[in-house]
Structures are given as structure tokens and as C-alpha cells.
Amino acid sequence: MAFTEPAERVALREAVAAFAADYGTAYFQSRARAGEYLTDLWQAAGRLGYLGVNLPEEHGGGGGGIADLAAVLEELSAAGCPTLMMVVSPAICGTVLARFGTSEQQRRWVPAIASGETILAFAITEPDAGSNSHTITTTARRDGDDWLLTGRKTYISGVDVAEAVLVVARTEDARTGQLKPALFLVPTDAPGFEARRIEMDLVSPDHQFALFLDDVRLPADALVGDPGNGLRQLFAGLNPERIMAAALATGTARDALQRAVSYARQRRVWGVPIGAHQGLSHPLAQIKIELELARLMTQKAAACYDAGDDDAAGEAANMAKYAAGEVAVRAVDQAVQTLGGNGLASEYGLGAAIATSRLARIAPVSREMVLNFVAQHSLDLPRSY
Image 1 (cartoon, rainbow, N blue to C red):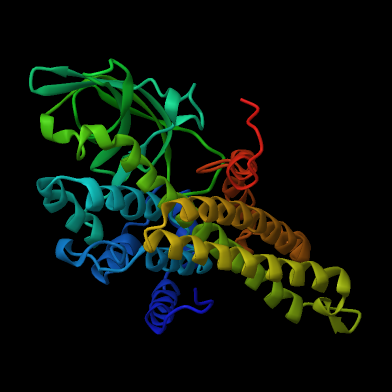
Image 2 (image 1 turned 45 degrees about the vertical axis):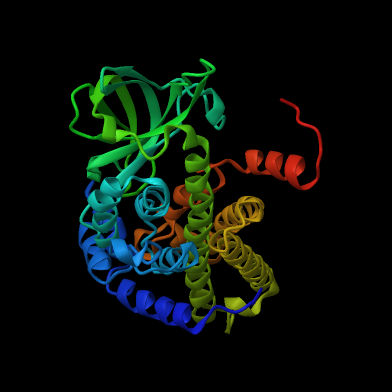
């Protein structure tokens, strides 16, 4: 594989970076503190085609791959606008619908996702299942031609700006009687659907919700694709989720590192810039190295996914997410340390990033579960559970 990006993606990065410079950290945090979404940025990005670069051209997308969408999110994040809904709507939901949705579902949803006119949320996490998607209890049962959906979900991003939620449930296999995964498109205004906001200490425009599904009646065409293909559909969305999470985290790390380096060049103590002291320069240099390694693994994961090598993509995506999450936390922490008291001043925009960067170690999969994956699948070590 090539270790440099194609000219088209380099040009895409440059265009997105120039676009995002008109928004930046001040815009992001002002919207977040006001409890508002990044609607202006989202709609403008959609009009320019940035939200749908990974989706098929026949459905209004750019015909590229997840590597292109990851580049867009990294550049937005590096400019101070790391929106989780790019992970959710075009990457997870858009990918699943473009690959597995019925023709009508694709016509109805994918062009609107690509243009930014419609945002979809994604609901898999449950209070008791955690990271074990095989034990989710949200179920869908037949009632004539309809489905009745019942269950609970937690920490679901962006329900307040979403038109519908792609919900992971379980249905009964008619042949074996066992429950198997299935995905359903659930309108947020459906009777029996309730979303309660989870109050967070994060300064973010992407709000979190607990969902309560009480016999939500859905038409037959709410089921995504083939009911026997639910598990494959689910994992088709989870690899892009990890790749995009890594892109968001590396962009966040780039933003923090740039702020720290700029300050270290200008701030002078005892006649020299503070960046001349190895106590500050060496930690920043280490972060630069770790950042470039994380970016390289993210690009590898995206390249494997776009090439159709799902096994290799799964391993690389988990590794990329781990590496990116670690460097995001370290970059923000060292940036705050470099700026001293200014690192917590609102003027410099780093204080709020402390909590946000910490999220990169937790979601969408914790670093401990990534280590479990690598131990079991890459090293062939036995499971402890």
C-alpha cells in the first residue's frame, strides 16, 4: 500500500481546512455553550459535498471511500470543530443504508444524508449490555405486517437533531427460535419513542440521550435490508465508526499540539522562548511522533475497509482508535501544561478539550475492549469472559 495520500485527497484536505477556518474553536464552543448544534457548519459542509464524499454517486454522494470522509472529519477537528454526528450519520448510517438498504430506503435517506438535509442517529448501546452487542435486549416482534419495537438505549448521540434513529434490535429467527440482530429505521416522532437528554459535563454541541421504546409501531419497510443479514450489516457500520472516531481524535490532537507549539514559540521567559527548554520541547516532540503513527494507522484502516478487506480493517480500525485516543489525551494534557494557567483560560480554548479528549479513550469502544480484541484476534490469546 502507498504511504502517501492521493492528490485528490490532499486537495480535499486543503479545501476542508480552508472551509473550517471560517468557523473554528470559538464558533464550536459558543454553539455548545448555548446548547445549539453546528447547523450553519453542517449545512454548508453538506452543500459543498463534504458530508457525502464516501457515499455512492448514484445517491448524491461523492463516490469516494471512508478514507475520504475520515480526512474531512480530521480537518474539521483540527480546526476546532470535532462533531460526533459525522461519525454517526454519513459514516455509520449512510454506509449501512448504501450497502444494505432496500432501493426505496436508499432513495429516501442516502441523498439527504449526503447533502446534510437529514441527520440520522445510531442506537446500539444499552444500559446492561455495554460493549456486548450479542446481549442487547431491545426486541422487535411481528404484529401483522408491522413491527413492534421495545427496549432501552443509552448514550445515543444527536437525537435532538436527527430525523430518525437507526436502532439495533433483535428479532426471532423463524427457523431456530433464537434472537438475531436486525436494524430498524425509527422516526424520532414515532408514538412510543421517548428521548431523555443525559446531562454531561462535556462542552459539546453533540448531546447524549437515553431512549425508551415502548411498543413503537413500525411499518414493514422500517427493517433495513435482509433480516437474515443483520450481524453483517451491524459490523459494516462499526468499522467505519472506529475509523472516524480515530480521525476525530487525531484532529483534536493536531489542534492541541498546534496551539501548544505556537505558544511555546512566542512565550519568552528568561530571555528565550519556553519551547527552547527540553522539559517542554521533548514532550511535544513525542506527541508529534505518536500523532503521526496514529494517523498512519487510521489511513491503513480506511484503506483496508475501502478495499473490502473487513478482517484487516477490523484489526487496524481498533488499533487506530486506540492510538488516536491515547494521543488525543496526551496532546491536550501537554498543551495545557505548556500554556500553564492560560491552558485553562477560555481565551485559549483548551480547558473544555480536557473532558472532550478523554472521551476518545471511552467511545465508541473503550481502550480496554480494544486491548481485549487485539489480545484475542491478533495474538490468539484466550478470552477471560
